[in-house]
Length: 293
Image 1: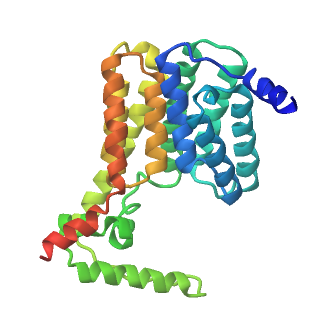
Image 2: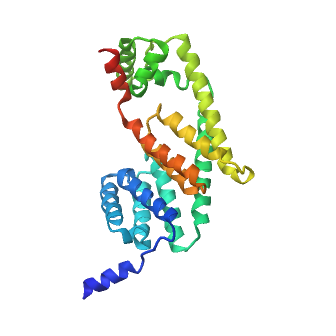
Image 3: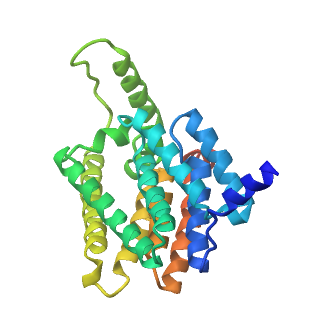
């Protein structure tokens, strides 16, 4: 009898999705929370179990009580490690709060769309501001990173012709310097003039595109076209196939999906969301293998 009463009390918080749009947004959000939502082993386990059960038992996907529990878990776990959590983990927290508020306050779909649009605009805008005050617009910001970061080894090799042996040596030297207990320790990295010019124009162009996306989303009411959606999709595909950050790119595209009204653009977003998952393919190792066959 008590179990039946408990089941009834939990079910009383269920929300029946009024549209296919709502169902897709909530289930995509749950899927991302299962894959990479929590911070720390305790939050990871709790969210994966809870969100998986919400997806498996369909009627709980919009349960107000469970979404409140998700927000509370994220808020607690992230607050303990706020100083070192990934950016997309903080964005997850804001987004789940939006969805939870939507359920509890019984808002209309416009509430989700407006907040998703604002989140994209604010995130991109603050990202541009943070990069500018930290010298991202100045020459050399990405130059060194491309010379020793393992994520860009093959890109640097193919674009500049710098031998793989020199790039590997750069990485080794940086590892040694980072372990030295000496202030001002440095090493000289192998590069060339083209690499310096390429990385500077690349970072300036990326900053420009990011600024455009921020403005288009923040002032979307003044633009009746879908320029903002094309810009966001192009930014995600163009940036994250070079900088493979699956968590941030996925949540950005989810927010894009959540704010769009056009069915045609919606399909573009879904296609981009599927395509972006391939950034996890070890492309560098594949190219290196075929180059050395």
